Image (cartoon, rainbow, N blue to C red; front, top):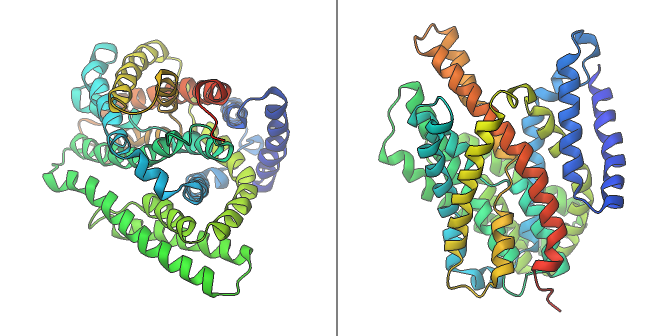
Length: 416
């Protein structure tokens, strides 16, 4: 099938599924994910390449499309956040940015060999894949809570956005380190120094960019559409900078983007509101592409063989994660229901797992081509890691988003 036929299917059915989700009062991303998975399954059983539904050209650039959608999510969140609200959150936000993810990674690293034929290095690599919460699932929901003023008095959405924006960085650095070990390379203290370096450099660059954008927006006569285009262009530029400098030192473009948007909101709330309203319109289309393509990237054939051990491992790892989140919230003003909702919000897996879940398998295939002696064992481990990642997405992203959407009016207080 052609590139534009695939676009037609995604957008046309995305609109229909969006309407269906509103009728059923469920998050649309659930339907988009399922639709993407169905397209992937259909393509698996279509032997004739001429009748493939998902155009290979579109799938080749799907990672870039997902990144653009993620940038839009972060801009929306930053334009909604208030610095004074973040100051209220304080210590728990810092703890939530790394403690739950690291505890889950260690739990998977220790317990995975009991459920799956993996070495401890491979188990910890799997833990770094599973440890990241999905900003693509969490941040839109938290933006909705801020717009409707649920939980905002105690800074709950702000806490979750701040923590979930950083924990991905921590897990990806650990993932790259364990992947290096699996290749037979060595890691050093400087490797882990990239974690705080990525965070600090991302925030500092974001502050500078945010002040520069605020100055341009206030002093120029650009209309709001041009301001939005400039904001997106700068965000793409920051992403390019990360790719450019990643070989030399850590820099998080995602943190820089959300920080820049936060500064724009702080300096001029009227411009920020206008930009956010326009981004909300773009998000309707971006959300369709993000979750349909995440669903389409899931290799469903990998889920069956290891479903039961993966399910049991997830029960263990998410239990440790939930305990870690609860520990981070000790001595906060949150009541039991609010703490339970925060725990729920830290469960979904999607974009990060879809992006890096197949990395070890790709390494195994490249080792096989180079004739490495350990290629077969790495391929087997890579297949298991990818399978567990698929199961994690299938179980946590739809269920967590459904319950987050259904329970927030009952578990969080609405600020008048």
